[in-house]
Length: 424
Image (cartoon, rainbow, N blue to C red; front, side):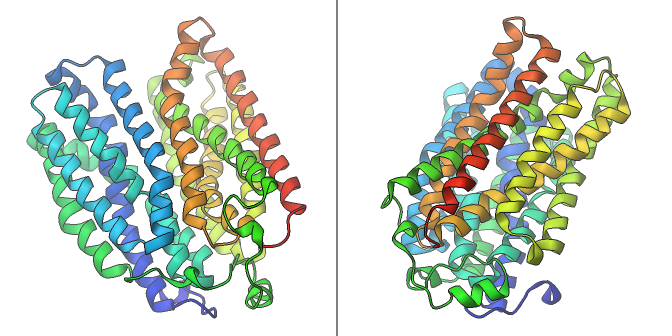
């Protein structure tokens, strides 16, 4: 791990290593228990509580809405107080959420459990982790963020088989009981001991975009420009809006793929086994994309990482239109989509820091997260509605391609506006 941390002025290698190692575990547990597990546990939950499939995932969508509504407040809290108490509270709420789900006697208590889970996710997933890294890692921020997303990319790989084993051994209620213990006994102490107390460096330090060592050195004595303060300049708000649109469209497509991909591929004539093979390629390619950014990060600006992410997403959707039952074409789609999706997570964390400066970062990333998770929540039902009115799987891919192209245009517009702003 020591070889992976660069020694830059203004950031503690020791603190960075401690945070990265802690978040490597806590992000896997948070994503795995509160986001990915429902794909495995859902049918058993629906059967016992008398929920339809649409009702089951409708509750999950409401959870993501709660997450989106809560995210800006969480970001502002981290800006004001640092991440320690916020992320510890998220771990505690995660334990309460999972315990409530494990004990839910009816649908209403089950819904309450997921509502608590939405707040827990707002305090414990990538966005609060990024805001916490921003406050405590100085110019190591970009590398630390990439390392955390590398670990987080294995959440489904770890938790899908783990959840299946728990379901078979102790049922869905027992599985949520185990998840509650993981939040309480692993995530809570790791957040408490790894995250420094207090507000961190960015309360008083100037913005440090973390582009290259030369750029960092040049900006080390430059105070934050007015544009770095949330809401001061109208053009800054417009830029943030275009950036948010681009990220939200990417997440809308990603959420659609996570729910509907297997059915879509089968509709092209692919067998279920082949469709599962294609889907299995996506996770490793996310890690490949993030690993590539990690290795080349010193030579590539974060804005270029974002551009690559949105362009890869367009390429993936274009490849999907050509699958027509072909496993080879499906694998090409999965490779492009996986790399683009992996880079998009990094771009969401890094690009706002570079464009606006790192003062007020938590509030900005929270505002972006609000619409990103609203899009995440709305996507599966919206796509299902398209299928319900007779658009069909094949034509629906063209809709996704159009959305990906709109995402590129929105990102390009944001970059054009960014060039007109004073440097943060």
